[in-house]
Image (tube, rainbow, N blue to C red; front, side, top):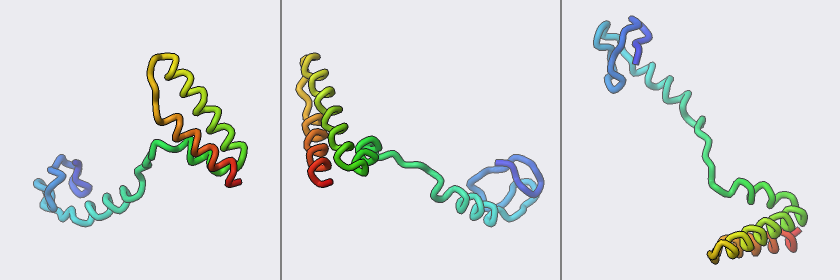
Length: 97
């Protein structure tokens, strides 16, 4: 890290600059406050969560995706449970709206 006071390289873990002995605790607090809440989280269900708000059309789209996914995986010799769960979610969204 570069010291904001003297501009020389110093260790990040220290609370003071090794060169000019300046107090870096305020700098660490400012850095930590600017970093809070800036990270984006991805749950892995972004498509489903967006389609849940589309009402019956979103449910139909979810069911179509599930059917295509199931047929594709079944033709490849695999039987997956995830398309079934997605299909049931689409049914729930369709009838809920």
